Amino acid sequence: MRQIFLDTETTGLSAEGGDRVIEIGCVELLHRKLTGNNLHFYLNPERDSHEDALRVHGITSEFLKDKPKFVDVVDQFLEYIEGAEIIIHNAPFDIGFLNKELELQGRKPFTTYVDGITDTMVMAKEMFPGKRNSLDALCDRLEVDNSGRTLHGALLDAELLADVYINMTRGQDALLMEVEGNDAATVSSERTDLSSFQLPVIVASAQEIALHDEVLAQLDTSSNGKTVWRSLENSVA
Image (cartoon, rainbow, N blue to C red; front, side, top):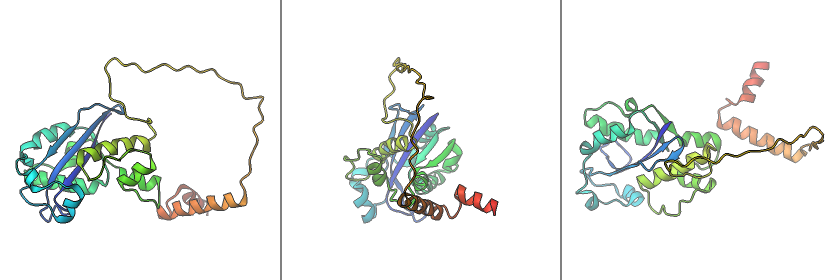
């Protein structure tokens, strides 16, 4: 499976209000391993960034004035993402801006070029209800090193997101560059007969049961009453 982790930086928060994309960063995973086949553009938006946005990404108009415009890279970008699963943190924001850039070039919407969109913000809210789920918060929670992230940057954020995603999906502990001819080690194990063992049953205390019920109530609230146990209760009733 080919997966692309994508992030953008923009001049502001409103694509419909005239804000533009100034940076695109893409990181490729193939069969859950980093390939090094990444894509990165700085773009001249032909307008200044809002002060709030500039404080976030630090990319100045002076720096961008000699960079290509989106029209100059659109074909390369679409060829790169074509047919891949795209993974984005807070996908509606980035897709909204990319759709606007494509619309300005007379192109089809972003989703028509890819195999699907996965939003890690949605994933995180399901996995960690009631918690902060920004990229920085997820890095802290999942022990992903984000010490180099003093400002937002599309390529750096896409790389961090790839590591966060792997940790969230429990696929592997670290991302490794694919090396041609590097075979995975074969691990053998012996079976142990456990039939003669008597495992102790530890009964939950009243306090533990109360804490468990509290967590279930929080999950039920976060899912608007759509949890499995609530559905079963309703079907029995």
